[in-house]
Image (cartoon, rainbow, N blue to C red; front, side):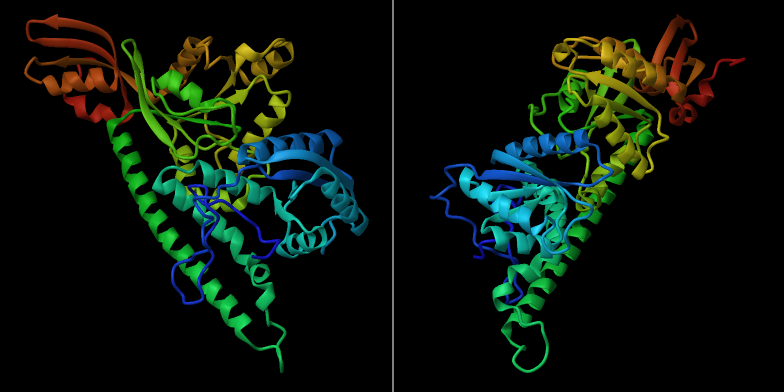
Length: 454
């Protein structure tokens, strides 16, 4: 195995599978089950700061990279920043800085370099050769975390698609010991055959995964259509990773999905009905968290998941109010929503983790400007206020009707209670008089029972 080979985990925690030359399924042998890695990798972080970048932005990004490395199971032992006008095409960093990084890695016992900036395949390969240790970039690190977190077959397919899309341009480096791509006498040989075979296998696997995910998209569309037919508004949780979306989801919907103070704990979307006797029911969905520098491969691979946001009537933007850069994280999510064409969607800001905020004066202005709500998903503080805001926002999606329903039509009566909000009921000799708020999609089902003058 080459010393600079990029090691990514696949769903389930195993290294990615490399294609065989015989055209069969991909397959790098997995590590022995009897010899698990006993100690975490010792990681050195590195970044390039360009002239127009604020220093705090680079420092914040490195702090986030440190959290990502920790989530992936690495131990961060140090960090390096170089200021340059532009990245070096061959090494990303300057040659002198690469020597400095190598010396620091040896002094600290680091066996992994994680670059906060995206590396080209050439830069990644050259850095690994110059340093003599494994080199990955931010995208590879995030893919590794996603691979560890994926649990459902859909999530694993999405992660595998993202990993293969990332790996494809790096296959040349994987087969450098056999590479014969120069052309001419003495340059043709088995290396080219192996490399092209690998490319064909990877491309074939990518096509197959896309076909399977296409079926997933169709299935999700059917589920969304079924929810639409039920006439229930859909509220989607969005926010920066580790903002507490899953904890808030559990609190609002009475669910028990796994949540933890770690990045990217939720990859697979979930949906639950939120109902109460005196308020209109709605569907609440939870989706994958966002992050700055979100890899393009993940945006593409998780298209079926992100479509849940596009179908939502209301976005509930959850921000970690205890984070020192809460405003910047909110801006990053809003920027990503804009890239997905969702910036005009109605939304509510929920500043979460109120129980961790010692002084909310600096954050209060953020909430007031966005007309948001302070909440603590862990303790439940502010949740009732948030529910009131949600119901006020989705109320305009319903129509208020006066209905006179005969006792013989229990189905229409059940629909009003199940899909709407009954404001008043009067039992008369000839039937039941109801004042009810119903979703627009359900009005046709009871239009025959509209009371005269309604």
